[in-house]
Length: 424
Image (cartoon, rainbow, N blue to C red; front, side, top):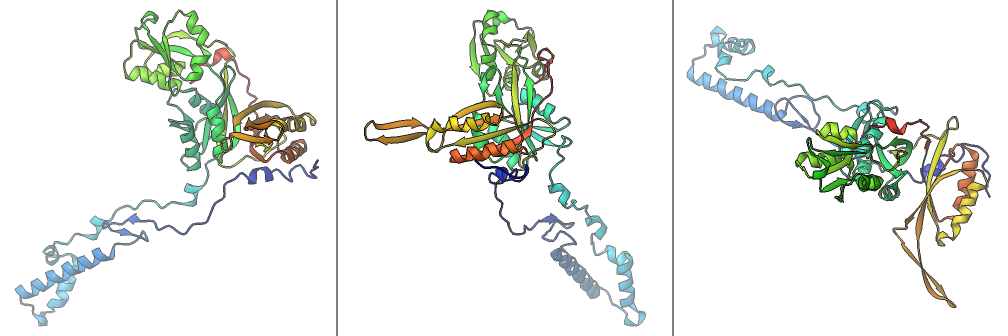
């Protein structure tokens, strides 16, 4: 058992080992367009080659004028000629030179450090990635988590992760579990694969509608399409509506509505939000078709850097761990939280991708094969609290792998199921 002397002494230690390392790279040469169309690596002034070309034209024109006209030295013709060139007289007009002013162009504004710095953390001007198309519930969750932000739709969950890692987006808002359909396992696997941190959560009530093209009646339908979770959440209601139709899964709910509208499918309905019906010009055949009115999806907010844990408001911490001896260590891990009165809000097991099967040789029993798992646990405590730090110190003694996915504020917003008309 370890006792930590200061509540903040090991807070960052649980984050630093999971942060990606960066290496210093050499300076990059930036090319900027110059006024003469030449790419100068320094980004200022006119190009030397064009300046030399203009000088060559000027010299050839002056020589030809000397050959065709007799210049009187005593009449200061040389001086007159120079004055004519500088004064843009008729002699210059014969040279057919382009004035310098006509080649002047406005240069692009150079990048500054403010262009490369992170965006504000309170939602203003943030770029938030979500999976789906406009009208998806994920878009509504992103808007709830970061009001007035710029939302970026992604066709896959992994694309949203990559958008944040590549600085295309500042945050990602992705679903991890639903009160009726259970966990979204894909995102739990991606949390382990990528090095992003959970910085918050948002819970969104889900209100499903049955959508079809205008003037289409339910009796004409032969199939219903939507996200697998949405189909599962409306299974009994569809049967009560007397719809003897095929049910096909697609990537997201709003995408199903878009597919029906784009392809003018009069025999197909989609399960999506009321906002998706408005966006894609569909009619609502049935409203609120989820089997349970208490249908809520929990989303997590992801960022490149973790938030600093605090104790002035309720916090939740998410971890993932594994052990070489399989599931026998799970009781010891859970007792570390129970002993300190730390409430667990979720525990999820996923197959160990790198080692899915563990082989055990026993002389008396023979060879046994056990499945290996990774365990995801959410508990109600901040990493700034001593009891949470001591609990993880004890957990670390029993596990071969431990990673803190994030310690973040809990979503304490009250909600009314009947009031949700948001956009998966």
